[in-house]
Every structure is written in structure tokens, then in C-alpha cells.
Length: 181
Ligand SMILES: CC(C)(COP(=O)(O)OP(=O)(O)OC[C@H]1O[C@@H](n2cnc3c(N)ncnc32)[C@H](O)[C@@H]1OP(=O)(O)O)[C@@H](O)C(=O)NCCC(=O)NCCS
Image 1 (cartoon, rainbow, N blue to C red):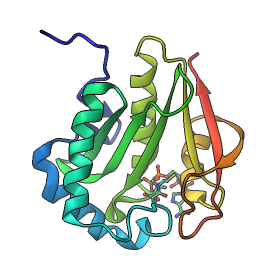
Image 2 (image 1 turned 45 degrees about the horizontal axis):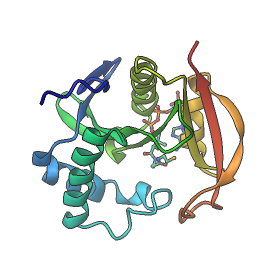
Image 3 (image 1 turned 135 degrees about the vertical axis):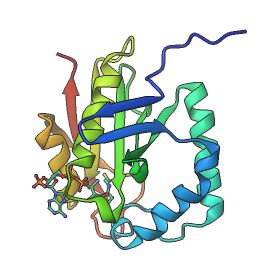
Image 4 (image 1 turned 30 degrees about the vertical axis):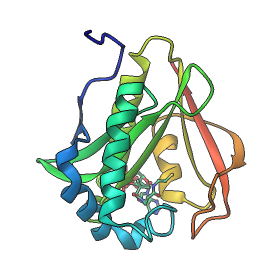
């Protein structure tokens, strides 16, 4: 039977970035991007320090499954065809909302890629039926991450405990929200 469930596009273009859905064949590229970015991922991404090829395979398997079930829509951030990070929309907040997550390859930071990726995901989320808000959550000490929702006009809602405390953080997350205009 054909599946007509509403989903965001498999490719999203926004300013300098092309977001494309992660696929099985990205295993080597996904693994390499994490390993090359370890120094700056380690402080903020609890899954990063012990990252292995098996983790990359598991991540891509989860991406496939989550895309099909609507639990999450994960994309490679690409620039000129090269992997420059990862981002996604996750259905793990209250109904009507999707959470945005992102990390950028160390060689590509400070070029506006996280901001452009979050903007692309916001637009895609607001085109989905029943979605009226998106949220970004980051550790209270993660200033680089905080700048993204601030630049995009999100409103700071408050704080909540993160599931896992990042190495460089306190474990208190700041929640930002943007509501569909
Ligand atoms: C947070 C992160 C995704 C930002 O990616 P990025 O592509 O460099 O972000 P942008 O270029 O869109 O920057 C947006 C703004 O963030 C701020 N910013 C970015 N890096 C910063 C840093 N290291 N320190 C302070 N502010 C920073 C700046 O205000 C920047 O705007 P500007 O360059 O015009 O001044 C990236 O640093 C990263 O991957 N960090 C590790 C993983 C992580 O923390 N992910 C988020 C978890 S919630």
C-alpha cells in the first residue's frame, strides 16, 4: 500500500545549506564527520566521546525507522556536496510541537550553517499539518547553541533538566520556542 503520511521534504534548501535525509550509504561519511569534530562535540553531545562505526550504523538505522514512523526527521547538513553536520526535527515534545537539534562539523562552524539549518527545519515543520510550534533546547552554558534560536527570533520559555548532563554543561536546559505565525 502506498504511504501518503505527511512528512517534510527529503531535501531542504536554505541559504548556504542543503539538508538531505540521512541514508544507509552515509555510514562512512557520518562516522568521519563525528570523529573529525570530536574536540568540539565532546563538551556538548553526550553520545560523542565513545563514538564508534557501530554507533554510526545504529544512528542511520534509527534515522530510517524514525523517518518512516514520524518520530524524527534527521538530515545531513551539506555544503557543496560535503557533509557539514547533522540536524533534525524530533517529535519528543508536546503534541503540536517538534524539537530541533543540530551539530556542525568543526571545519564549518561560524558560517551561519546551524542558523540556516534551523531556519530550514522551522519552515518545513510549519508546513506539516498539526504543527504549530518548534523548540530548541540547549545546556545553559552552551552559548554557541543559544545564539541560534536567538538569531531566529525564538522566545526563551524557561528551563528544564536535560536527560543527560553534557561534559561542559550543568545539565540544565534552556527551552526556546517559536510559534507558527
Ligand atoms: C552550536 C553549533 C551548532 C553552532 O553552529 P554554527 O554553524 O557555528 O552556528 P552559526 O554559524 O549559525 O552561528 C550562529 C551564532 O552563534 C554564535 N556562536 C557560534 N559559535 C560560537 C561560539 N563558539 N561562541 C560563542 N558564540 C558562538 C554567534 O553569535 C553566531 O553568529 P555570528 O557568527 O554571526 O556571530 C556548533 O558550534 C556546534 O556544533 N557545537 C557543538 C555541538 C552542539 O553544541 N550542538 C548543539 C547542542 S544543543
